[in-house]
Image 1 (cartoon, chains in turn yellow, blue):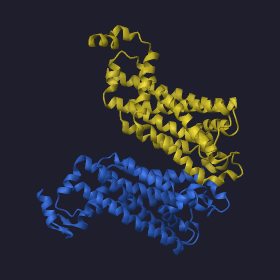
Image 2 (cartoon, helix red, strand yellow):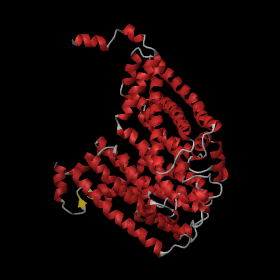
Image 3 (spheres, chains in turn brown, cyan):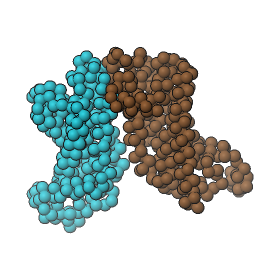
Image 4 (cartoon, helix red, strand yellow):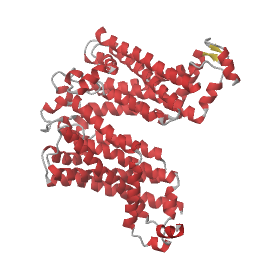
Length: 276
Length: 272
């Protein structure tokens, strides 16, 4: 009986090689998502901290919405929704890269590499798992903000754009953290990248409109691609759905994601060459 | 064991066979400070994060000063003391991370076995925190003043700022030590940071109470750090008055007592 079960669960190696890379990537994505969901300490901070910062800013900067030049919003919360989503998924994306480094540290990577799994599937699986969670996180943030009166004026289409942006941001940040994780094999180094990512976010229009900034800081924020992305997403929230703004919100992180994922692929090839 | 017995026999005497409490505490403080030179990466947050905060906050939120009722028209005057207080928090937390490392690698066991006064094991890190806090005070002040921050009541404003930063670093350090003595590993760092940053964000860091709306108004009024920040900012927003200073001093004194007990009971529980 057990032999029969074993036969069912573990098909011959030749058969497993036939499994398409896409299916392998999806299996690894599922593993990544399940692994994150089973550890609340990994996903809880990515929900709680952005929400706390939004709640504090909503009270502390409530009167800023009356400043000339501040976009017309119902509340600061509505203005902050895209920034909160980006913050949340950034947390998750960094822990994705961190997990990859942990896989290397604890030997799971070596077992994966030794198995007949397609090499790109290892990376794509990990990144896709994070991206799926990023999309779910977006829905949670949108729902919580709606409870407090901050609605997405773009409706379901606007929410879809926000989800698309979240997925692309997860891939963008996941790509760079995966590159660092694969190169160094050190979870600590990947975790240390968080402040750098946070600095990039702060020097954008995420928390305050660039029109109300001044000097060199304004110039940096206006040229920060994260500002272009967030402004596109914010348009869906405070004005309504607009195709060109939606494209801006999704394409900017998508283009950067292509670059960061190719970096990660390159680092993976180097590690495989080094290990072989 | 023998060492413990020897220590126990010294009772409340400040001079244990291993040296006086002050001597041992200063040696431990020196050791902690030498680590700054040996592992600069460990001290980066103490300097780099406050510098980032002063740049980011004063850059991103400079327009907040245009809101009617904001106590200054110079964003740097508002955010520089805030950034220094954040550096003070990192200075206090930093020494706790060092203690956590010592606990994990076994060095702390050797300290406990040594015939020294155990009070020095708390006083030493505290002394190190009080020196370490000068790093953000100096670096952030240099950058802040160079960028345009101005004292509005002469040097007394710097004195109240330094006293506030020193006090906050010590309170943060005692809070952190209490956590480290209970958790006894480096994972305690997350809990220490969460406690401190939540307290900081729920204060008047970004905006004065008068301009806040909703729940944060009440929380910020109840948060002792609000009064320490009022004292820290006093010399940057007008004249330094006793009305702004004494609540800050009282909040620091209260914090030292409460978290001193927290750290002391944690230490006793650990060595029991």
